[in-house]
Image 1 (cartoon, rainbow, N blue to C red):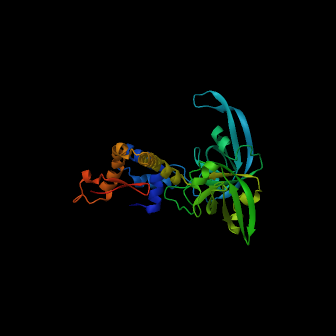
Image 2 (image 1 turned 120 degrees about the vertical axis):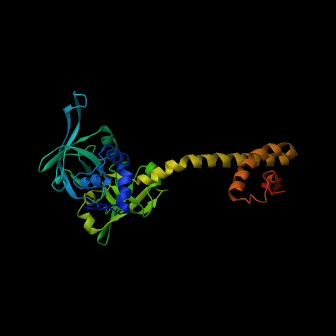
Image 3 (image 1 turned 45 degrees about the vertical axis):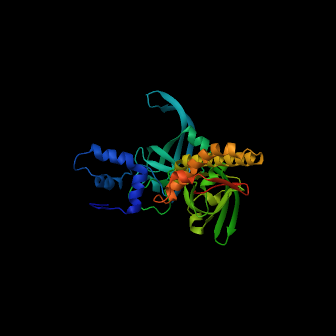
Length: 334
């Protein structure tokens, strides 16, 4: 995709489509005939359309205030209570604006106030339930990263800033100049954590070295440069870290779930029919039960025949010829 002053490769295009498709296209449709997608992309250099992060921490900030306030203005003009965090920072304040997104320990939060040295964010109850921001105190160091522009370089991986849960550090083992860290996540996250896959830990994009599903842990390695740029090496065994797994793995699981469920039902039904036929044969009543099982079995076999069979020579009526060999039901063409 080429436009004045903007050149985007395939990876950047996919980023835009993955994160901002619906809104960006709607924005273009609402504009004038001269307002093109290129115009939106050029403008996004200064102000990202939507928040997506790379997991490359830009600076270590510090919590200035974490407090529960009872004077927050709500959407309907009333006053309510909620948690607010004020963070001391510098780099991530460059280009900041009200409503922009900053990842705090990997949590995507919206800036509600800022000046030259601090910014404030609201912390929702769901965030407190699922992340290590619950109980964080003033003075605590935190990883910070600004949202990427749609055409920005991504040196990590696509991090949404939507933390799935917290894990517990089980071991921190030096390995030369590197540091190997082992983490135990909630069991429900282990299917999405694979060796050599990526994961965001406290907002840091990391490569999984080993994943042990049986024992319920994974580990990763930090080189010396990374150790000096993030807060994780300053933590200890037993501390909690925010975890965000690969969202694509969850989408694949959701899309395949209905198919896998139907396959399981079919396999179960065929196994039941085979068992019934074996019992009928042993009881001398195989012929009486064969036709009933034959109908159900034929449906599955016909499906396979449609996909891989030779349609020019086979007749579906000829596929029904059940026999038992060694206790196993076999269907052959007559």
